[in-house]
Length: 121
Image (cartoon, rainbow, N blue to C red; front, side, top):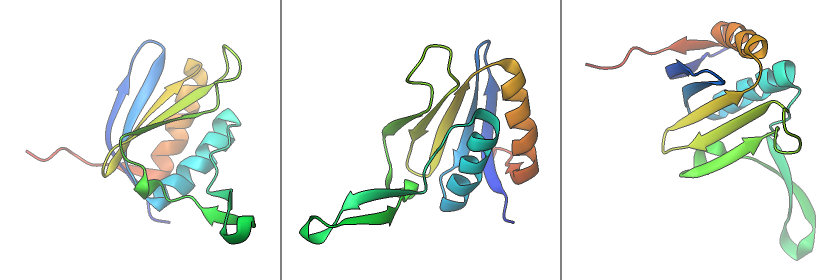
C-alpha cells in the first residue's frame, strides 16, 4: 500500500494538527483511521440528484476542494470527538479535538500508513 505524505505535525494543549498531501489515497486511509479511532464516518461517496432528478452515487473527489473547511463528527454534542479538515490547493490541514489517549492512538496508527517529508531548504 502506498503511504500518505505528511508535511507537518503539531501538538497543542487540547488538539493535534497535521498537514497532509491532498490525494484520493489520503482520503481512503484517513477515512479508515477516523472510523477506527473516533467512530467517525468520512464518506468516499455521496448521493446526488442526477439527470431527470434520479438519485445517483458519486465518488467524492477531495482534490476539487480548495479554500474549504469541513467538520467531520463532533458537531452534534459538546465533548464529542471532532475532526476538522481545511483544504488548500495541494495539501489539507487536519485538526483532532479529542482526548490525549485517542490522539496518541490515532498517531500510532497513522505512523504505520504515512511517511513524513522533511522540508526543503
